[in-house]
Amino acid sequence: MLSFEEKLELFQSFPQLTRSDVSMGRVNFQFEGSLHEKKNVVFRLHPNGGGYVYAGLLDGYETDEKGYASIRDLDAEELRQLTAASIASLSRPPSAPAAQPGQSRAARRRRMAKSRWVDGDGNALELRSEDDLWYLYAGLNLEMAFESFDEAEEYLREEGFRPEG
Picture 1 (cartoon, helix red, strand yellow):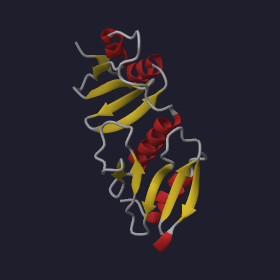
Picture 2: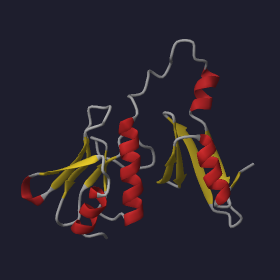
Picture 3: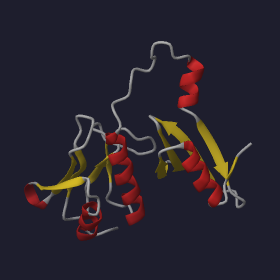
């Protein structure tokens, strides 16, 4: 588990976040550029190492009723990826209604595309398109986020993955 100081240092490395000290030694980090009502990316980071990162707009994370995922046991890379994905999700405008006028079901399915990628050792990753970004998952864990399919595909191929099927 990362220490409180290590987590603080990691969050402070994101220039988009603003630190806010709150009661009992806890710290929040806000993203003022959020396009959603939600501004807290990091919530109640406690000196004991506990705390939460907003994952309410992300798939693959267990969250509370307010959309926060516990960060107590995440390692540095997992925490960095979750924080970056949280900021990216809050940077996108709120989703349009599910059925947009003139948009066919097939077009909506293509927009929410999923593909499974495997490497020579049998490791599998899932690439999902959600709200104009591409997310790469290993099981339930978010590995990376990409701005385009081409960027995601290039990364996967460089890492030795190929589309399954």
